[in-house]
Image: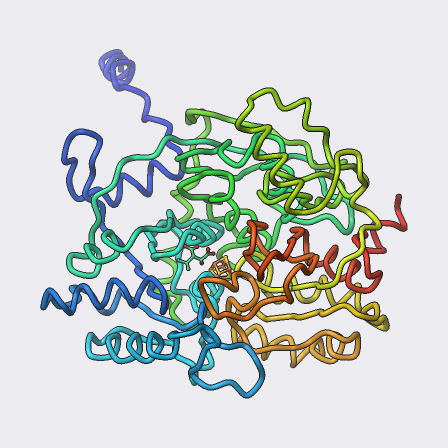
Length: 486
Ligand SMILES: CC(C)[C@H](C(=O)O)[C@@H](O)C(=O)O
Ligand code: SF4
């Protein structure tokens, strides 16, 4: 007895690990030294912009794709979203690009969700929807918003084309180990306030590089009680916070979401998978390099005023003064942003006239997002002169929304109801669809950069509910269910 006790006393306590650390440990093929690691990639997605570039390189080098069964492709960025579309784009020279991507992907035996496939959609929307993004996996795509997939409990991040080529050829990439951060969102959200408001607020508080290079875990009561759609929205903007990835440890909500999806494990495999996924939660006492706690119980709907997601305020607030910004470079960038958006410090966002409204993008185009917007739009009309457009994130989302009659609500309110894709989220480099020059737009997207949604277009980021409410009002305003409580 005594010996046993002493033996136990000498056994070191098992190391408390973060969810990220556990996934990382399970995927390191080799520690290459100098903070470089060879990591196995479980899922690799390609889209017609970055995927076309990587595939072309692989073909030119005469290599084959090592694991086509772990590689998937879709068309989302350039593809037109107007009803009745073909495999075409408005982007000059883009049709050739689309054709080439389709031609290159097929001979490699990569599963391709193309225009005619009912599973087509924005890569970050379809991967979880199809059960291809799973907890505990490493997931990459040549797209910065791949971090979205962390909402399902994967370690997911956007890579450059040389990493993507390396992964096509070897199913591994060489990468550094990110530092870790945990953001705990505590408290209960007010009605009309959502995941989008939480992440915009966080970025506003700590800046667009507040999470620079970190693997960020989102946790806390407000995250636990959130749907997978909300979790995806949170993780989607981890990159706008500077993070390498966002991650929410899988729980019952995740399992419920994944069960029965087309590519989810089944039967005995399902039980084994759930047991493994449960073991991946962050252990009590695990250490993070940085940790923030945000109380969301009094959070109001957030809207951006400038040209970075960090330029954000509560909807009842006013554009902040520039003299409080001490660093001259930061002050200059604020001044430039103000000049671009044609606003002055002290000006209130609420009541600011808009000319366009967009609901879509990998941030907020899932069924729950469309439902939240439809709830506001039901029985109402978009204000005269507003170009209002809704682009579901995937063909499946579109069909589900139509089965619920949401399309009628959007159309009756005066919204255009389109086919799925990235569409007006990013007009310049992608599909070429854009708002009219100089438009002032409220959008459920993730980037309010200069010219992102069209030439000289000023974009204000907000939640789908806020976008819908503003489209009806003709000026920036919060959704009514929130106003009723104010
Ligand atoms: C075109 C693509 C590579 C790009 C990205 O990396 O994110 C786009 O999706 C974006 O949102 O800016
Ligand atoms: S919807 Fe927008 S942010 Fe998302 S992948 Fe497409 S272009 Fe990028």
